[in-house]
Structure formats: structure tokens, C-alpha cells
Length: 224
Image 1 (tube, rainbow, N blue to C red):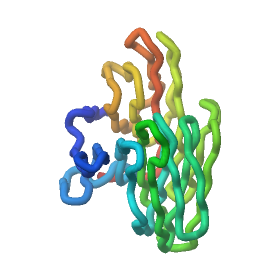
Image 2 (cartoon, helix red, strand yellow; image 1 turned 30 degrees about the horizontal axis):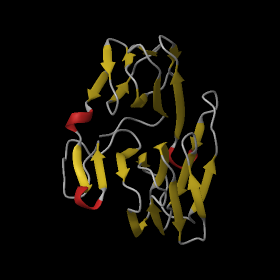
Image 3 (cartoon, rainbow, N blue to C red; image 1 turned 45 degrees about the vertical axis):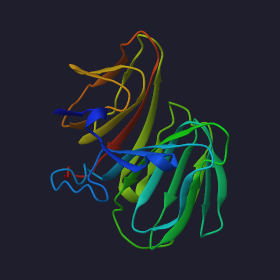
């Protein structure tokens, strides 16, 4: 089964007047939807747009695996465990909040910042927080989040190119840019697909230009 969720149906949050725009794919904050709390391990998939000089001041997280993919611009990260870094397009950032951590996320550059941030539920809560940035991850190298039983695959497709997706109990596919064919479905930027029980599935760049996808492979039983 492939269930498509369109970008235009996302809940709009943030503070647009302050230069912060957020688009939420799942129940989030004041927007509570009991039928859209999670899919597999995924609790949130937020598209964030920060104007230069804006950002999220220090705030707490716990019992969450947070993975961030920068689309445009440069993300400044600082956290209460002493990590400070700049995250750029092509980098995978992973903050394991574990028993508790506080962090700051800002656009300290002079151009707009766009990033996708995904929250995953840990298999076991608690523990010590950890932080990692993988710079320039390759399409052929999945990024493992063992604490959530999940793998992140990046797929960058040239015009007309196809790529096989992993066979797994369920996949979550987010289109970062371009138009993508997935089975009989056509997805555009910001669209997502929740895939359950499909095999031999491929994605194709169908819009005459390149496409970029984030694909979560999850092995646990479907939830949400």
C-alpha cells in the first residue's frame, strides 16, 4: 500500500512574521490529529524555512532521535553537551536526545535556510545524548539510526533516472526536490509517501529534471 500525503496538506506553523516558517507532516504542537501521530518510528517530518538572522532559541528534547537534512543555506547548531557545528547541503546531522538535551538551531548566514527535520521514536528511552554530522553522504551509503531501528537512504536522481527502493515492512519517502514517480503515484516537492508491504518498488525522476528523495527504511511493525 502507498499512501500519499501532499505538501499543501501539511500543517503550517512557526512564526512567519519573524521569518520562521514550518510545515508539519504529522500531528505537531497545537495541531493535534489523533489519526496522524506517527508512521513506524517517525514522529515528525518538518520542513523549516529560516530567514537570515532567525532561528530556534535553546529548547529541550528527550527520548527522540533527530535527523536533519539541509536543502539550502547553512544551519548553525549548538547543544548543551558542548557540540557546535555548521550543517550544509549533503550533510546528515543526527542528535540523539536520549535522556535529555537542549540545543539551538539558527540561520546565521546571509541567505535563506531550508531544512527537513525528522524525529524518530527510540526503541529504548533514556541513556546519554550523542551527536554526529556526516559530511557529504553518498547515495550508496545508508545512514543507520540503530536506536530507532531505521536506515536513511538518500536518492539523487538525474532526469529520467530510476532507483530501486529497499524492500522493508514499511518505508517513508519524502521528496526534497523535483518530480518523482513511485509506483502509480506522482509526487512533487514536499510530498511524502507512507509505504507498507510493497516489494520491488522503484522511484523515477519524471519531471524532466533531477529529483532528490529521503527514504526511511524501517523494520519494526507499522504504527500510526
